[in-house]
Image (cartoon, rainbow over all chains, first blue to last red; front, side, top):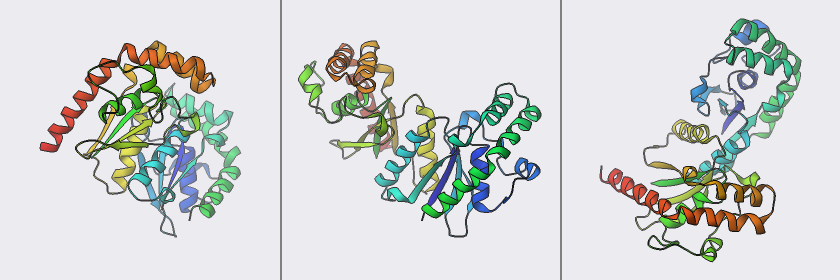
Length: 148
Length: 156
C-alpha cells in the first residue's frame, strides 16, 4: 500500500500531512515544521515526481508530490497504471491537500516561489498552516483509517 | 512494451493516433466522417475520466497501445507515472509517451470544447473530425515515426 500526499507545490501542505501521518510532528510547532524533510525543497521543474517520506507502523509507504491543480488527473493516471501493472487500483491512495490551503498560505507560497523571499513568505505560510492545522490533522486521520 | 498516446482529454488526437497505429484507420487514404465516429472513445471521454489510461489494443508486434488524457499538465503527469513506477521497482525503459496534442488544430480544439465541455455534441463532433481530416497525414507520419523508434529500441 502506498499513500501519496499531494498539494500544489508538494513542499508544504503535503509535507505537513505526510509528517503527521508518520508521527514526525503531532502538534503545531513552527520550528519543527520548518525543519521537516523536503519542506520548501521540491523543485518546480520536477513537479509530478513522487518523493518517499517514510513507512508507517502499518507498513504503508508514504510519499509526497506536487501536482499543481491536476490532482484528479494524476490520481486517475496512477490508479490506472497500478491496474495495468497488476498492482491493483487500491494499492495506491492519493490524498490531495489542495483544499486545505487558505489565503495566508497562498500568499506565502506566492512570496516564496514568485518573489523569491523565503523568510517573509514562510511567515505567511506558517500562519496559514496554523489556521488549517486541525483540519489537516483530521484529514490525515481519515486517510489513515480509509487506506488499508 | 507499452505505448501511451497522450493528449488533453483522450477523446480526439490520441484516439486517432492509436487507431492508425492499430490499423483501425487507413494510412493511405483519408477516412470519412463515419470511420472516425465509429472509433472507440472517439469524442466520448468525459472530463471526470481524464487521466485514466484506456487500453486500445495490441499491435502486430504485441505492443500494448493506450490513450491517456493529461490536460495541460503533460510533463507533470508523465513524471508522476514514471516516478511512481520506479518506486514500485518497474523498469520504465520500455514505456513510450507520444504527445499528439501538437497535431491538434484550431477546429479540433473548438470542436472539442463544444462537444466535451459544453455538451454540444452535434456541433462539436463534426468540427473535431474536420480538423483532424485536415492534418490526417501528419498523424500517419507521426505513427510511422513511432513504429520506427519502437523497432530500433526493441533491436537494441
